[in-house]
Image 1: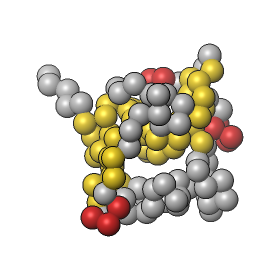
Image 2: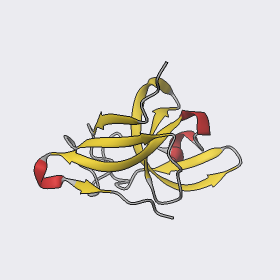
Image 3: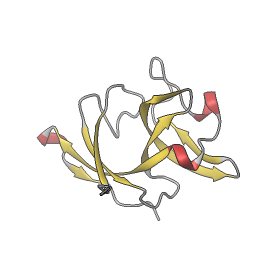
Length: 111
């Protein structure tokens, strides 16, 4: 089986505003190296069939601490609610926004 190293996802909420907005379409590098400050896509720890886009803020012994940029967003849930996200739930690093055209951008690793 061939594993494609890229995945596309759509942003649905405003917890990552202003960096990301609802309707933004993202390219994610599966298994890409994650460093603090990167935008990442992970499986929601409480709902494994749901993906979440968050900012990796730091890594502890249990995994990555993933936070929303907009802590006041309605319905926001992140590591402040569920704790560190295990590495196996982190799908990859967001590398670009390709839609809508007015928001096209490339995200560089935070290194």
